[in-house]
Length: 216
Ligand code: B12
Image (tube, protein in one colour):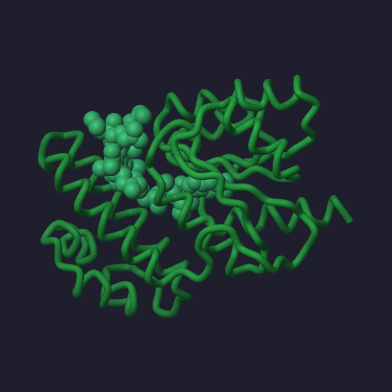
């Protein structure tokens, strides 16, 4: 039996999906009271992971994965505070966020929502960017921290070349990584030279808090 939120996504039933985000306890095991970004985290991530696994096993089609992704993106955009590049920030830390090479942008949106809800401003560099483009953007925006989201293993491995290029260019920017490949292999973040790794959107806030402390 699959969870109600996952089934709502597969029926392309936006009304039920939205209702479950508003009242996550109606989904099996979902915590009772959560703020919007965290209730999205609790429902969206496991549902899409399961849908991805069912697609991989041949049970679902790519178009079903696509529709589920579109609905989740609509919900994230509707319910999240902070889209695009924020203005007011709680500190001087200049924070950028990017999806390296691939086009799975939901994780980035959720991280951005939580980080901005926690009071930081972010510079949204976009999705599908190459390593040289990201390095140029990091320099142009004089970023102190770069949050990198990846879902394809190939993109996660490219973080090594991103970190090396930034160090060769003399950029001191801290690189924080996240996304499925890093969740599957907790040693990967260190192997690709990242300064920190977070498993969830809330982790991004925790890591930024730590970096802010160090910068003081
Ligand atoms: C939805 C989805 C899509 C959607 C994307 C919609 C969108 N707008 O983003 C569509 C249908 C477009 C798609 C396309 C493809 N996909 Co796809 N997709 C998925 C799926 C099912 C869910 C991904 C998702 O959005 N999860 C929800 C988000 C919120 O979770 P998340 O990104 O992990 O983010 C959370 C945490 O990881 C963390 N986090 C994320 N980033 C960061 C960053 C920092 C700094 C921190 C601290 C934390 C953090 O916080 C987030 C919230 O908690 C996954 C399956 C899976 N297991 O992940 C496959 C998956 C990623 N896709 C896959 C593939 C192969 C593809 C395609 C190549 C398919 C094809 N043949 O065309 C294309 C490639 C597109 C491209 N070039 O990028 C594979 C990748 C395999 C691999 N080893 O690389 C997967 C794993 C499916 C599978 N099981 O095979 N996909």
